[in-house]
Amino acid sequence: MNNQIKIFYTKDWKDYELLDTGEGEKLEMFGSHKFVRPYEDAVWLKTLAKSEWADIDGKFWSSKVGAKAGWKMERKFTERWEMEYKGIKFLASPTPFRHLSFFPEQAPHWDFIEKTIKEAKRPIKFLNLFGYTGVASLFALRAGADVTHLDASKQSLKLAKENQELNADLQSLPMRVIEDDVIKFLEREEKRGNKYDCVIMDPPKFGRGPKGEIWKLEDNLPKLLTQVRKVLNNKPLFVILTSYATDSSSLSLGYALEEMMKPARNASGTAGAGGGFGGEVEQGELCVLEKSNQRLISLANTAVWSIK
Image (cartoon, rainbow, N blue to C red; front, top):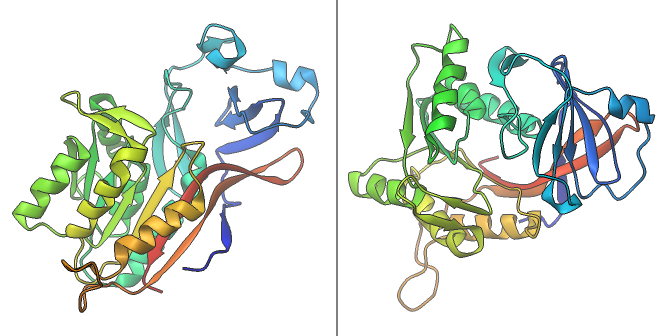
């Protein structure tokens, strides 16, 4: 693994802009709607005028600042509205968890997913774990992959299907949407002998499965990666791991992926013959370009294993 940190970002957004950051907050445009959300890493002064920051549709208040946590809307607007990135349509709406139903900083991964699957020129099975509302799955679907999309949230999966329905050319394409605990699903897939060419995962710091299963990133990530390896085809295309946990690092994610893709160890603890996938791991930060200062603002850590 190369220990260099890569910056993942795109200049291709038209429906989204990061307008300004500072003093623990970020000011963003989602389509025609403007919002303020917490961004604790913004330990600098705001650049835009107070009037710009006040002319908003809504603000999410963090419990850390002593206010009542949650959204406070300043203007009435359609609860859900349509967004688009490079021809893929999806719905945006404020959620109780400060998000707006998708993560714009993940657009570089969407580009990579579609390009890599298209260039493979063979049947591809794509697995999206902790898939949320499914934007990444739609790019894999458009590229020609057979998609399995999994999440523990019924509401997220409902929105994933709605997003697919928004795109007329994707409506009839094969996307399995499954509500399940990730580890249990992977164990069953291993027993069934189901294999995948591409896996992406965005595990939360903490979460619960549909039957109350507790997920803790620091406890469960090693087991997750072990199970993912067991459902990979012999010649996989890529594995993407992303984390929004504030105490994670891109290097640690990169080391975890590199270890996962090495040859399996035998009973004596030494590497067994064969079984490694080769390829390379890149790790870095998912960023968006801030309009006010043209700075790259880091919003998540990520690591990507792929066959170069």
